[in-house]
Amino acid sequence: MTVLCLVELDGADAADVSLRALTLARTLGDSSIGAIVFADSASAPASALADYGVTDAYVIEPGTLEGYAPQAWGRVLAGLAAETGATAVLAAGTDRGNEVLAHLGAITGLPMAANCTVVTPDGGRTHRLVRHRWAGLLLEHAVMEAPVALFTVATDAVAPVPADASEGAAIQVHVHQPELAEADLVVRAAESAGRAGGVSLATARVVVGGGRGVGGADGFAPLEELAELLGGVVGVSRVVTSEGWRPHRQQVGQTGTKITPELYLACGISGAIQHVAGCAGAKHIIAINTDPGAPILAHADYAIIGDLHQVIPALVAALRAR
Image (cartoon, rainbow, N blue to C red; front, side):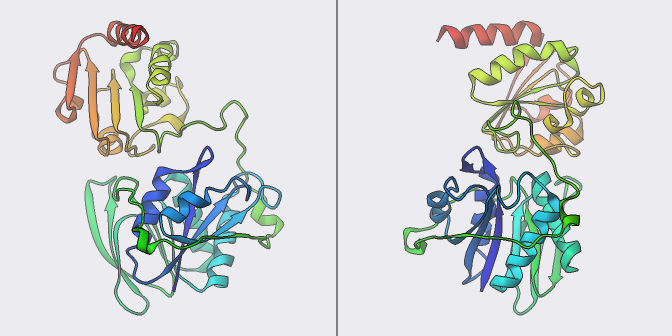
């Protein structure tokens, strides 16, 4: 039996969320694991994938399919699932993973479950699932009946664990040439050179978050500087995107990105439940807020009651001094 996993990239490396999905894939019984990677074959992270139990990597090169076209990606997954006789196809529960798997479900007519935390084969055509609902506030137990199970893995549900040495095998890299229709390429997203590369919000190990307390679009410069010093990225609350201060792709929360960093520094963020649902997977939360009663403080490991416009520059200066 074969299990296929869509692997997203973070620069030249496999994204942390995809390594988590591969870790869950290994729990699906005695199955070989195939990774689907949209990248140049020379830059595909074959060694890292092999460490996580992948036996076959199917690479779709930019010359065949350039950019992110969700329906075309879904079509590629459908073709590979049929070609390999896959019993399951999964991806990380990111915006991209959920979108591509939804297209795959529409193309194949198969059910798709999003943001799963546990998937257990139950013999034949059924899988028992546990998945997040209401942004992780509830856990739903369900049974999926389908010849091929389609699901995404909640980004904070599984720790990325390499396979045992005994499970490791030589990985084979296959350059896959999909058959696509013109209609599959109607919707395609392009990323400007200025935005390409670097650490993504979903995979960053440090996130510096900014909320209404930042004061405006111009107030994010110190947060950008701090994030750069810490090797992280900037995230924002919903009100910031609603005001047009920062783009939606930087939003942390129920309607944004769920993050799982080592450190989340929440600056001027009150901590509405929708935002907390997005940052609850952080290992450590530090809050900077002038309001000692802000809800975010109840979830923080450490808190600084003070003005972020004074605290952040002082922190930046201390880091630069070291």
